[in-house]
Image (cartoon, rainbow, N blue to C red; front, side, top):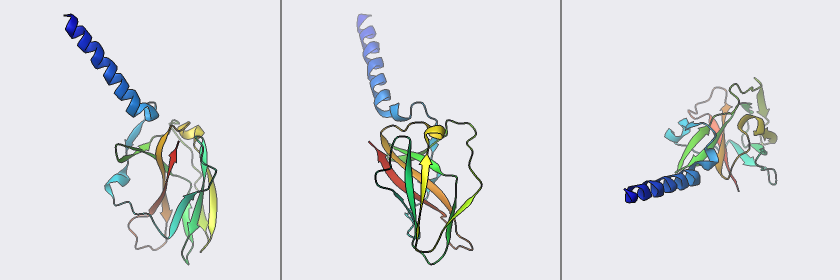
Length: 157
C-alpha cells in the first residue's frame, strides 16, 4: 500500500513538472492549430514584414512593411498571433471575446516602407517567453497568387 502511495505522489509531481515546463507560456490562453501549418508557408518577397529594431516587448512591437514591387500592396488591420510549440504553430485566441479591428485597407506604395505599431496587451495580454509570429492576409488585386498572406517571426526572451 505504501509503495502505491509513493508511486502516485511521484507520478503527480512529475506530471505537474512536465505540464508547467511545456504549457506555462500558454496555459491561460486558448490555442487552436494554425491553418497555415497545412500550407507551404513561404515567406513572400513582394511584401515583407520585419520587426523594427528595439521595439519588441511583451506588450507590443513595431512592424515594418516593405513593398518590393512596382505595384501598390495593401493589407487590413486584422492579424493572427501564433505561438510555436512542439514544432507546430498555434493561433492564440484573443482574451477579448470580441476583438475589434478597423475595417480599413492600408496601402504601401511601390518600393517603400510603412510602419505599424501592434499593441497586443489588451487583446492577448503579456506574451511569455517563446517563438511567435504575426500572420497577415494581404490584398493583391487581380492576383494569380493562391497564398495571399505574409508573416514575420520573432522571439520573446
